Length: 625
Image (cartoon, rainbow, N blue to C red; front, side):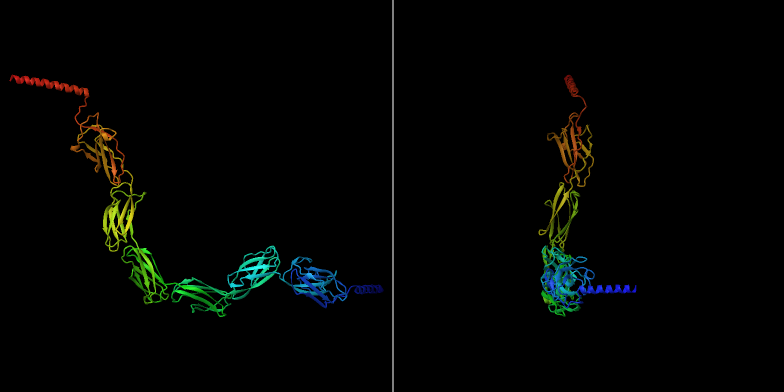
């Protein structure tokens, strides 16, 4: 048993010795391995030169992002890789020469998982053919094949920069960075089919000097960078103003936390201030006393970064609370751009109306009463004393009139309506004449302040629109008066009653009718119910009472009951609106027994016979005596 174990151990040792004789010796590290050039782009050729390997041995060459040492294993320590050379043969001296070149791949496809090759440091490994241990290690830096150019290459914060790129993957999204921080792409954020693009960005807040703009292919990882120089810039709000105004100054692209000053026409107006970490600032100042004109505003930091803009000091100016009105009105005037702490005289049409002093900002406020003037445009002027700084504004004196009541189709007036017209801005001491449809209805004298008040009652006139004019010969105001157009009620007849006998001087009576325009009546008497012109025997118009008695001169002739007179009445208001005619009434005048015509003739014959007999008798009796 003991001898059996010794024999087994000896057999194993013999087999292991034979295996060592068959398997080539594995060096701990190649004596020399060179990858040239050290910086290459994807798709470019790489040359390999290695020595110290086994003589005439087959080798594989791997390309990977993973860092590994000699003796470590492919697929164990290096999982993702591309086998770029398969079974290359060393020469008798154990040298692998430049014939065994390869092209930098864009992807690693032969390992456990695919991986995109991105710019940066990569590794080249050599193993003997069919074996996994690494026997040689080299390095190569993959250079981005992308390239970008900027237009412009310098500018202020917020500048639009056009980026043109090439050498990226086709149709891939791109990412832009500014000093390593993402920046929004305004347009052109994807490559075309050739891997080219044109993108636009706005430069973010940054300090003065050089900054790096980088573009990265989102899929390929290809990077390209270019330098952009940020220049200082200031903006002001507003771009013009007057003495005493507050001006805002915003600056970008200055030094990091740098002391700075702001100057107006070389006069320091802001000092002992400091920019932020991104080189930006925001400050205000008050415009000092300056004559009207254009001046430089400059901001400069301790590093010499500066920028200048133009600022306009506006000429002195005044503004009025109203551009027009009437004599006696109170008007406010405000001025800017005058000399500080100086008296200002305000004149109206060359007459002084106010005196006031400017404040420390060259501003003032005053009020004045508009003096007596006829209508027209007048100059209001403010003068800064002996400094002869003046400013003017125009004020228009105009007429203004009102009428009471104001009438319309929906709310008309009526005859005898009391009307009042008030006016201002007319000629003081002048005479204002008021006319109604061209007929003068009243006059009034204009007061010392150019005001007047005229009153009249509307005369009788037809319904509809009428023109009222008030004028002093120079000024004229026109109004429209709307007269009502509603007829009055129809009057009801009372006397004479229907079919009765009346006196020749007949008395007529009817019910009263009321209307706000006033009422008159028209009475007609005719021999025919049609009241034709031929049958008309009496027509009275403009009757103001609800009764009428026929005068002796106009006595009616006697008529029979069978051929009576007919009468009717209607109302007419002061706006010439007529009511309808009343119903027709009838009456007769003179003696009548109510006998027939044959009976009347018979009676007349009898009377005649009796008169004959009486005459004969009287004659006989006279003859006896």
